[in-house]
Image 1 (cartoon, rainbow over the protein chains, first blue to last red):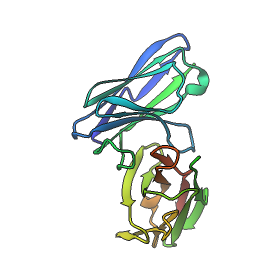
Image 2 (image 1 turned 90 degrees about the horizontal axis):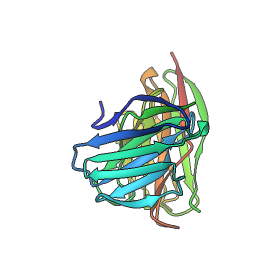
Image 3 (image 1 turned 45 degrees about the vertical axis):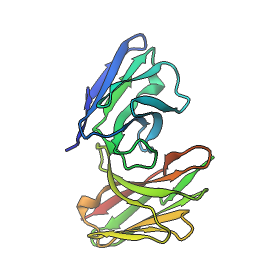
Image 4 (image 1 turned 60 degrees about the vertical axis):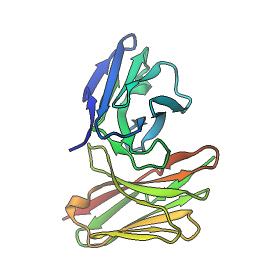
Length: 114
Length: 112
């Protein structure tokens, strides 16, 4: 069981669609993250929010747009994606707002772009 | 930039055999974390090492952090089929910005 909840579990979208991934945690953690994971590869950092402010953007294309409405919620808005963006998208949270704090991952959203 | 190298990429063992995965960083680390990801699952945090030369144990798992804080290892004694999965190290360094970088992972297969 995970205390970081991600919805939806699976998503299939066309290249012209707009969709959003959602993440929620109620552990009082101060940092939230988006990671992208391709098959048989490690998680790759995309964005970090620390105390609800975007602190790291790993040069992610603008077709991915993060949003942190409050300390418990994290969204990832998707628009005009490419087939190569198909991957497992993992949300994580950590107690501290500092990098290096242990990560608690959600189950992920498996995204397929057609 | 910071790199974290992890070997081996794959390891096949017979149940009951031991297993070790190794991580090496190009820079001195502030800490190193270990995660396990079961097939079809998500990474689950196992442990964090902070001190030079630190050794921590969790049942059959032994984690070590090198004296120079540039390498780490995870050793599993007497593997079981429940140990199957991919083990990732993740090192945090303040070189070039304070970031946590995942190693490529070691995929463990255990044959009963």
